[in-house]
Length: 273
Image 1 (cartoon, rainbow, N blue to C red):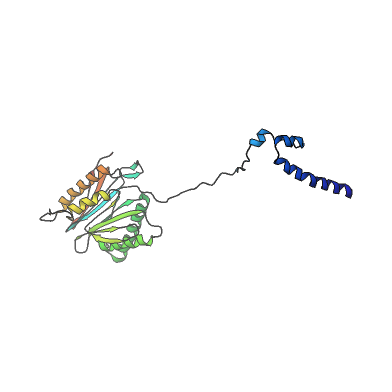
Image 2 (cartoon, rainbow, N blue to C red):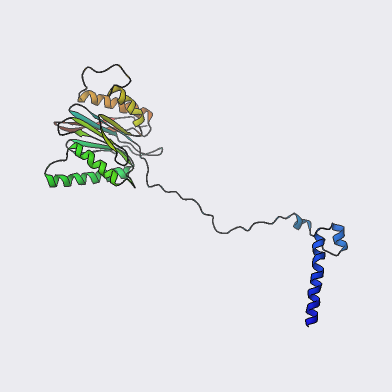
């Protein structure tokens, strides 16, 4: 038995070089050596990589924010302030609502207008109203407009790592009865202004305000400052112009006129296409 195993091992060692040499031979030499030829089908076939039956991973993206459009303006005068915003709620090229107000009256002498993500806007307005109600219960009076401006800045900055995706303007009268406007970015950087605009139509509106309110890039100036009624007509003209060029601005404009005697509301119709 040991002898037969040794003979088989020796035969395998002798046959291996011949088989390897057969691969380098021509077809005639392979046939004469008794080595079987490879068929044409096997010679032409290429080795295929094994395919996985498991579904390949797909990249998933999620954004908690969406911009629902809209335009907001606040404009301060000597003894008044006007805060206005359109009422169209959009998503992409779809109109979700034509009667969604973006202006929130916080006190009898202060309003804020917000554009951007509608859910964040509602949450922010609700939180500010709650904090202002707590302040009035504790102190027995309403918080002044400069204090509301600072409160909003603190609220936005508190959420700076996951900010409210909304852009705000606050307008009202200060303790001396002078109109004031506060503009913000998404994380609470603020400054006091004479006028401010946010939203999808702000890039169209701000050149009008620079020229017609701040009198920049022009030599023509009003001899006297505009009163509340003249400023209201200017506000309507500006929104009409923006509505013709911005698809996210339209339907109606909610206007709040804040004066010493109180706050009154007007609605102005825009195009609906």
